[in-house]
Image 1: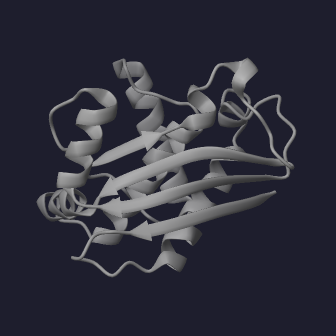
Image 2 (image 1 turned 90 degrees about the vertical axis):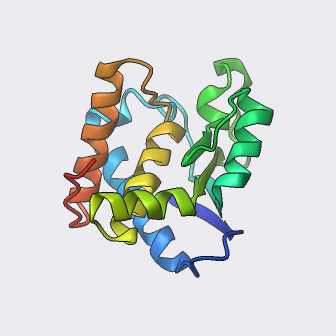
Image 3 (image 1 turned 180 degrees about the vertical axis):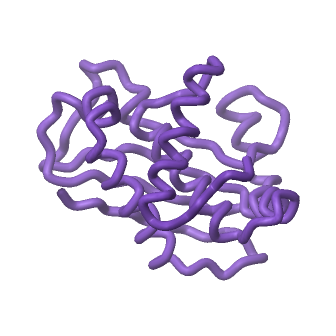
Amino acid sequence: MNINIECTNEFDGWNLDFDWVKNTAKSTFEYLLNQNEIKTNCCLANYEYESVSFDFVFCNSGQTHAINLEYRSKDYPADIITFAVFADSPGDERFVLDGDINLGEIIIALDKMIEGAEEKGISKEDELAFFITHGIMHLLGFDHQTQPEYDFVVDWQKKALGSIDINYDKI
């Protein structure tokens, strides 16, 4: 399976290494899809495809505030917003185009993410890897409206991060 990832950085405070972002996303995505509990319960189950695509947009909290207000009617800046286009579409409106499934877009406010890393005393890269994996869980159709759902998402994030040698215990 091919994993196609596009990245856009609209944040002036950090010159991101897009190769690192893509490698982190691909590695954790592949790890998750190789786990039976994820594979059989995610939005990709029962679909035939050759590749998946998704995008990252890195910006600041002012931009996520505007997006949150416009699309979610929430008046606060978010650290991460995921538009899970495939997962959030009704089954009869999901489509595979030329063997590719477009999962959607992950928007990360790097200023908020960096603040969180500093508060937790961890590296920006480890915190970003956590956000990347969190967004991927949403793209796969996993949400966290209840405490058990949240625990499920975070538990799998930690396992995926562990698969790339990131020990993420400071949430």
